[in-house]
Image (cartoon, helix red, strand yellow):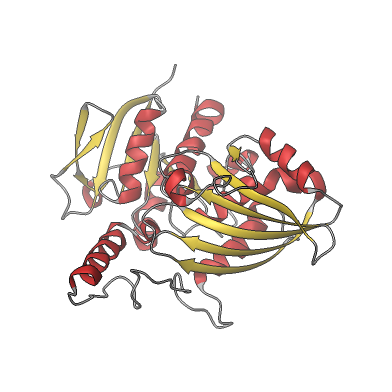
Amino acid sequence: MKTYKVAVVGATGAVGREMLKTLAEREFPVSEVIALASGRSAGGEVSFGEDATLKVQDLAKYDFKGTDICLSSAGAKISEAFAPGAGKAGCVVIDNTSHFRMDPDVPLVVPEVNPEAIAQYAKRNIIANPNCSTIQMLVALKPLHDLAVIKRIVVSTYQAVSGAGKEAMDELFTQTRAVFVNDELKKEIFRKQIAFNVIPQIDVFMEDGSTKEEWKMVAETKKILDPKIKVAATCVRVPVFIGHSEAVTVEFEKPISAAEARAALKKAKGVTVIDQHHEEGFVTPVECAGEDNVFVSRIREDMSVENGLAMWIVADNLRKGAALNAVQIAEILGREYLG
């Protein structure tokens, strides 16, 4: 079996650490793994698998020549600066940031949805990982789109603070503790209090009043699944550490029953259906943390619209929403294109 020299950019961050963990767990065929981060993190150590420890190197000083694959999750500006050069050096960059997602020469890939798009990687040697909320929604909706053709999606998200990074998780923890001990609540990552609250803003506001996170879900769904699909999204940050949840209503071109949708989803790769009509018959973020699959619950017919279904979709945003999706892309890339 061919092995690959793999670099992980942003190795000290929450997603970067999850990428290293996922590479090891899935026994990706590596000849060498390089942990890269900013100069201030260089010299530190990160874990790879149960036994190995990697010394963090300075991204600014690293030469990508001879590196086969790079998994990157260090911010859009950093990706903008290093990824094109890495691609020109012969390294295929699988980028988890938003910077390249809508570039027409860069494939935007969810392996369960559009793996064939990976073939376009050679244009720039860059592949984009979609937004975490888009990934889990489309993994669940692709089998239904194949069955009855989706016309319109209305989605409200309930997104964990880990989607904003380790500092956001720390802020939720410290604010929660502050409430109980009557300390001052410090707001540094979020403009509003996140502990015991919900914030209907993720990313910056745009001219039409939507946020960039909501725009991402609209634009990425069209690029990945079908440009004709209409999408309305409301994205909300909630005081949960790990696991994004989504309440999704879908309108189809053809009739589709809840039973038909449930049966199709049970056969779908990367999906687990837990849909029982009692107090424990659905999945919450706590239960999906650390899991690879996208979980679908509360599948029911929406009587307010013709050919409508409603459902509840939950996934670990650090795994399937980021690290796992990137590693799955790397697996297909190595198996079908670089081997």
